[in-house]
Image 1: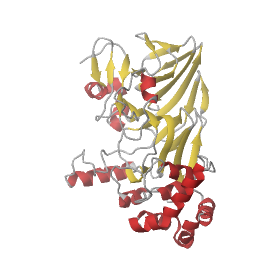
Image 2: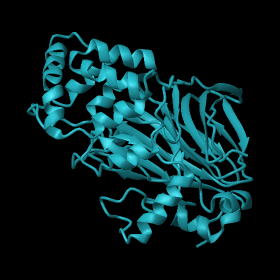
Image 3: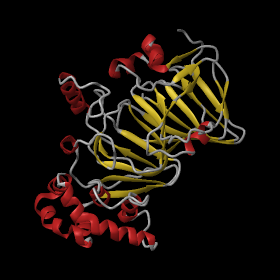
Image 4: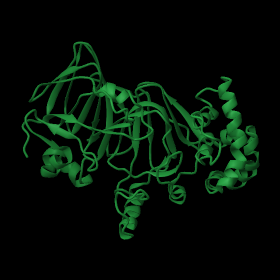
Length: 402
């Protein structure tokens, strides 16, 4: 099917994962969540499991089908030769409950893992499958609210201090001194459930008391540990993911600040809303805090056991009312466009997806259209356009770096 023009309306797909919130994405997109489903993610891209629909106002087609029918015109010959597809997936996230402790593989390891599971005959949609595709999954998030996440192991001094300060972890000090990050993490991740419960039950109960007494803030691991049990759950069969809450950096990003996460960095989103951009992959190796498939040995194989000092990016003002968040990968780039009774002009060098987070604007191109809060457009390579707003408007743009 042929669409006319090079600027299209784009409609993404809401994902109803259990950890999502109930109001943010419905309000952003302008629909009533009458069935009261958790709305966790809004996908914009060409991932075959939830491809966006693009429309010229008369006809519409899934974005992946449009790209497959004309890859050079849709994503450029260069991008198609290098990636074979639109190499990014653009999302809005509303994190109400903690996400799983997770790590993403490198491209090489993803290809090996995918081939191994294919050879074993594991169905692509099997709940226990680790590798859904052959791709790596680096990702960047830009906070839309105060956003909290776990990101990488603490520095050696900070983790050593944690083990000393928490009575229940004192028994782990000698192990950490002798065998380092990997020895420590492998020990707790492979502990028998009865030993986990015996070790950390007193800690969990103490953190619950401290939170009830307003002795904790979100910068404290105990605040998040308490959140796991605040729904009245009995303190038993304690998820081994709580070790990660104490061992990893707890990071706060303010609206407009960004964090990039490459292969091997253990992490978990804790709370808030963000714009997320990643390589076009669904490869996630999980180690806890989730009812989904957990594969600790596979997680351990791909984890970087080294200290991480989180880099919370404020972005670079590149003029033209744009802020760029530099990402060290060829798959994607992201910019924030902030307008207030002014304009932004550009020529797309790749397939760009633009979503309005706040306010509205007019896009003047080969086809003029209005974009309002929650609305998104796909702009093809070579299309020149101007975005004009008579008031305050915030947009985010995903693209493939030149």
